[in-house]
Image 1 (spheres, rainbow, N blue to C red):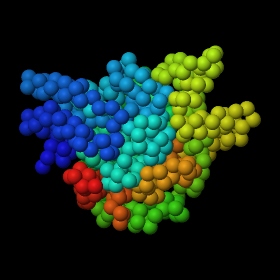
Image 2: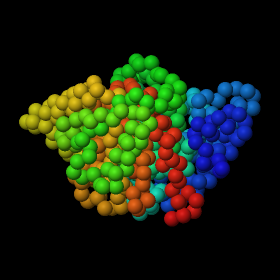
Image 3: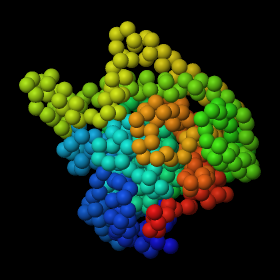
Length: 490
């Protein structure tokens, strides 16, 4: 077995045991990046010297018998909307050209304490706005399973890096499905924790009431390890919740016998591909075979989720992105006066999708339209949350597709933003309700593209999601399959 075939958990154990060094793991990951990333473009920046220096430092600590932490010298990747002290953060946008962060995000501090090695920053849709990672100002990331297709978005770079064995794990952010949907498209495990479980301090805000940092990994065990490293209250984030962090690793082995799994009819209606529906139904049947009880539930306001989401997220985006004016961060273009300078900097700095969302958000917040759109959307959000509350009175978690289709071709939907928005229909409601969700591979279509099963949990009940995901992955092998490009295939 090559070094890169090991899971994050096994690699961390091997470093702690001294059977492999952090330097060897890091060199192997950097070699894979050098070989594959010119094609995949999963990374925006790679810090090879910094990663090797950090690995050597951790190896020296192990040599002295000092503890290394949960992640034990294993290299990981970070989505480029989380700040790392002394490094560039771009959000894949020209408006942040030249910005270097003076501090670490809380999740970066916690990963450092856990012994992680940072390989670099991964590509994304600009300011996390998109479902394909084609809206990056740097380059479009390609799907490792078929380089003519998208990896999903907006955390497509992190998903592709983990799928192509260019990192043992990665962090992403999920505002409307931006971890779960690319995890589904790339055949990896993507976990969006409960809103408030992981600090957002140091995450560049897109839509503050929806954004949540989460993890990409090869399986549920690695997801438990990464979440355990980054979860917990942070006094610097007012939305961070004072909840005890459970032992996620200990929760994995409980099995699903007696678990009540909800199956919402609304997720299997118009728009889902036949192959996706077949694979997800088979996955739910497998959970049933393993001892879970499958119960039909209803989420009747699902049809309103996309419209509600795009009103709320664009309103919050128009407010959050007002700070990028050419004065305080990154790029500045000259003008005859301050307003001309603002206009020129924002015109040149933002891409088309960001401008579209700023315009939409400004419109729904404007005088005369606030009550008609934004206030009404907040009321519908409450109804969507109430749907989940009623469902969870009868079930322990909900099982559904992550995306209605597998990965689409590059450029196929770029000129049709409405169709692109509808691809998030199965993930958006989870963000509106602030719930945890996980996507795990559950099959492949006839073109050889991965399909994702989404499990949705009660607030702060990530242990049940991880337990169900682990039980399913112990009984199947979808998560062990490797894209052909890793072994030199197309």
